[in-house]
Image 1 (tube, rainbow, N blue to C red):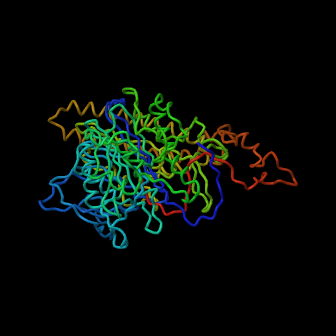
Image 2 (image 1 turned 60 degrees about the vertical axis):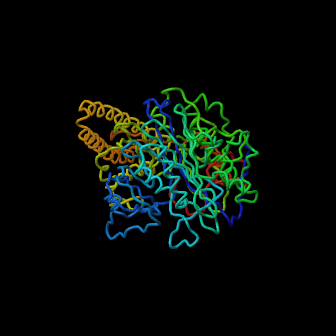
Image 3 (image 1 turned 45 degrees about the vertical axis):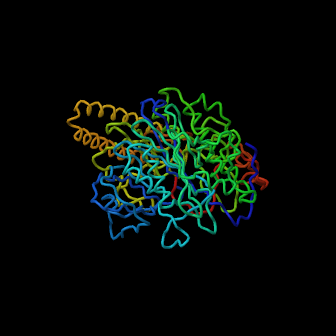
Length: 623
């Protein structure tokens, strides 16, 4: 990566770079369990997300029924519609959500776990999401948006796939057809006066219990209407990474086994001059990301926007490939970035040895801050004396870059779906930032919802409640920022312990369920549901207790082990020598005549090689 000079500038236009999410997918042959995995982090930014983990039940519908499509809200309540789920019924005077449009309802819909996007259904269909860049923008047909013509957002598309499909192929075709017919919009498209090209499209990665994984990319079509989409099937022995940019590159348009796409998929790109058949060696080849991914113009502001987009996405791709397939990852240049016209770009996915990728490897990857690399966010002055990798918002008008970690302090939740047949698919779900959570199992074919604290109306991100499971995880994540290096070590050890218990429990329960035989299938599912819920309730209680244990142990910048005379380590949180000796800190340079607060820097911005940038924009929760 070329050095980027951070500048102080007066910014009248700031691009709408949404605070977005990461997908990791693992093919069935690369997976240690033999089942495909797809995971997602909800890195939702400042929005007080609706954190309810909702169960949408299986349902039969009368002939002639209509299925409403809503502009799903990021904040509570995401939708209000008791027909969808009892959890979405009007509560405490809420009014029903107003539909953007309708499609014909099918005779019967599957049960599934739901957040802002559909997560996993009873058949094992599993989805992860990541908002992407595009050369087009589209807006919803809301009453307050006369410029919006579209009625299908990615949130509802994912839910419709959950309701209607068992396979990834069905899911991408169904979502694509609806998007083309009703028009696709992204929740992060800004408005016509300031179009948000950096968040105007979407990616969903879809796994199913047959072992297939499909990557689905969609953007608004010509004139803020309809949709353009493509889907690529991932090889069974590969791993995939998506970090807020399209990853479908060279499509073979004649290979319908591995590529699906909207009618006339190349036309708009040819008309606009974004792509030409002359660029390709074969008339059947089309580079989807080259054609439709957003490439900022030379006058785009801020001046470093190309580096922001290139490495915000590319660095995560490189890191995920390196952690999950080290041999293939070692072949990749971490400084290439990922823009539409990048030369020798990263592949959509890379091969991994058979059975080499475990669930723990995926959850550990979601917890990553580039530890041990030259991009390590726990190092340097910005991390402070205690190695804090979290980089919060910056002052408006300051343009610069930090690395964009995989694990973000602003995550509302994350999960890893394991897509297994016969009702054994599991969502491994964790609240708040991955580096401070424990992933707990919930079965896709569950016969009931999660414990009440997972879908309670009693509180949420903007309203504290002892009855909401999100809160103890968030409290621990906030508290460990006081001394990340010391406290997070204990938090991660606790998470490892709990997740090992959870994995052992699922193995034990599933063996027991198998002994019951096919004649007791429903009873077996009820057992799996009740016992996994009981485990989740136990862990939430433990996490509350753990939060106050940490507050007690690490209070006052000491480490308290017990109440004895020698039970406190007064140097357990001592500031390190390298930090104390820094002239910026001023500890060793203090004299009675000054300087009293360290030696001030010269006020000049310095070269930086990092990727996380803060913008003064109103960001919705998106992926």
